[in-house]
Length: 593
Picture 1 (cartoon, rainbow, N blue to C red):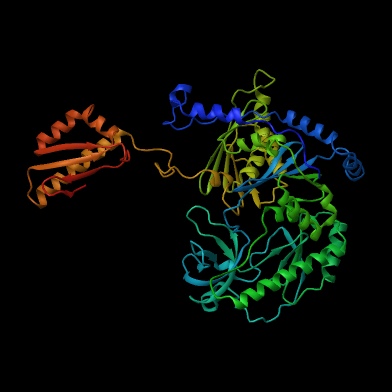
Picture 2: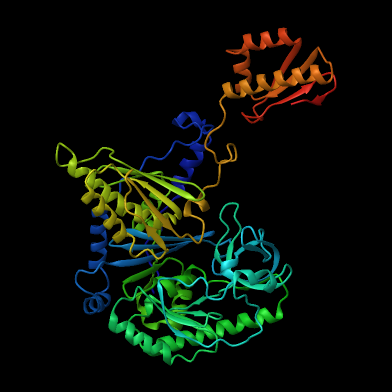
């Protein structure tokens, strides 16, 4: 593709202005750099504007692309784009539907890809109470391996219909037939091959399984399963019958199984055979590493985001892929040529001066996914709070624009909008675990059912496993959503080092009370145990607490000194934490509190 020859804009003047302003006092522009930044206001994003901009881009596509699209697509089909942006430390892929961000993935280029990785490890210890083993795989934390995940085929996915059993062969691989057999089959110190199903999140180590799987474009190879199945998302009866016959024709080694993925719908037999051949070659390399490497050993890693785009994201319903880095463009084309050559025509290299995410209005939409509050079209809003295992979402009326003065129709309207936006935000933020949604109260059971059905419909295409319960009597909807990796915000934010992620610190009043209480208890104990009457104590503390002790609490300190024959002195420093203090006995120099 020819290089864009537009003249590069001159940024030198802008740089000089920024440098000169940085040298002035922070207070001159009203921004005190010593204070934390104010919470960003929620961004209002006009989705109609985004759709109109997308339609304009569709009209201005090259003539060849428009002709192909005319014969291939239904007239009312949504226009889907994949936008790939690569920077020095990060690669981002945005899935756009009619200009609106519907999916978002981040790959940090300086971090290892853990989910799907296969390791040869060693059983470090068994915990019968937890019914779990901890496996040394050479990482910072030992991997967690539940006993249930050590049984062959025990974690079968209910979304898969098993249609063929492939006879198992005796390969010498250790196996347990029941949970009771596990301590005997896998004693401490024994070698074991595991695959990470959930990366380390917070203080929890990675979760693993011994039921390995290797995803391909149309198939998933399961080397130890011995079962073949079809994704239940393929709901066409004739197509399912065809795929069942196809599975029986696949030449699988004994004891191995395959799953036909949703992307295999409507594909010719040759695609499955080529996919299976590539997966078997991949497995042969892993087997060689299992035999030749000592524990712990790294055996296999999932492809990077470029490889995953080619394998998982670039499907029939994607109209165009734009990549802003030449190396990534070439790599994507090379990968597509191996697995699905016809899709290579959809990929274009973005070669403009303006950043690609700015060009396609992605940056503002991503910025919204890191905010607590998200505005709804009708004027309502949702507020999201994330913890390690639970996400709470509150739906508020905000400054609504209900048509009726009594507002009855607005409550349903706002809740329906909230349901659709919550489903979208969970995908974009990669939220998981237990999700609690507090909708605006609806007395009408019919309205509650409408919101429930809207939520189910909005999450129907979510690839993460999930379960949605109807709205309870308290107006609460509960959702469980599987999460394989940390949420997107976890990679951008870290717990506050000052408050350890609690979001609050003790007030000077609370610390003052604690100091007085501990000094009183210590003096009484010294009188009983050591017979000490007169004590000279020095307290090290934060200036905010000292101001409290010398101000509102000064009379209390004076009374305590008189009652207990104490002599108190204080030393404050800004470097001390507001909640920390230390008391030493000046006669001995030893710390007493």
